[in-house]
Figure (cartoon, rainbow, N blue to C red):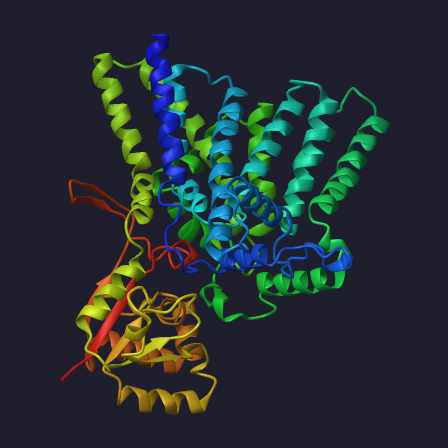
Length: 562
């Protein structure tokens, strides 16, 4: 039996590694993700001239801390040393190094989630199996493992901080060691991203709640140790936030203005007239977790034991971060990333309860009961299985580019949309072919503000042969067009129609088919296939846009009617 369990464990670990690392080179050599691109460029620029202290390993990029950049740079230098490479760091090396960090953090996170589950006395083999499957095949883990950004690192750090906080309040382990580990991890979190300063609330809450019998002065000393220690560690691992404080502070102010809506950036239009909390419940959690998992989380959050300390701390960790972030104007999926693993824990704990209750009163044969239960687990993780398909297939922009070169005649004039990270068609064949088309990258974002753009658009529409809609970023954020040619009558739609009349008119005419006909649509939705036959597909274009536009946008191509 032990040998069988060992084999099953090896299989699960192999699946975990495969789900995190398979297709890690997707989209390369193109910079498909803007944050990933900015971090990779910062890594490329790292270097040290000892005569200029302020510029030594200065990334000149302060949207995030230096710790992940230095980690990626160190990995590349080790690789260059081992293989005797003396060339400068390439963009692809920087991206892959950042993605390897994300994938590795995701793998480690899985094991810490198991350690959290053990604190809830969940060590029965069947529970291990359920936990493995649900954690491994979670959409958010798979996606963020394939992004060379900070989300996987922050999820890992917050998971460990929560684990240590629960241990502290349950009095499992030396409190001083736990506190020092907690402050180190909080400091690292701040060195990854300044907004993770909120992580400190968890160890502080654990210190206060666990300190009933140790004296007020000891509690105060521990709190000061965490606060000062975290700041010290953050400065050590992200030193240029202090060395070049003016640059850091300027970047921080910009990021705050964007997050709060004070600065209306073009890439935040999807949040116009959206309701906090409701937006995340509708556009973020059902896609990042999967609808079934999200439903189980909600039920577990409400109905799992309320008085047990471990459950209380788990709920607190979720609420502390969620409530501090949910009311921001910008509601990107990544803003919720640190609590996704903890929401998964709640779902798994509820599954345990349901399994135990059903198993206790089960009147069916054991094999039939287990078969039905595992079938349900399969349905639970199906979106995650489907999400892997995105990285195992050629990027959708490669697919669209091949179709364009094959089907659109030379010298055709094409109207496309500006402000994409990369434009189609990609130059994946020859640079000469890129110049066979007359491509107009048009600024639709300012169409309703500038009369000259309206005049230019009218001129272009009389001349162009094809129109590209490379993603949902403009039309889904400024119009309420739906397939049945009806408009949802709600306050947001009314506002958008008044705010962007020119854009509404343009997209309504385009999608109506009056002047242009859609000749191609390319998708890479999460899907499950069997020998080339599509069994299930999970369309997710209506999710918060950053969930889809970086790695699997929907591309639409229209041809002018004769």
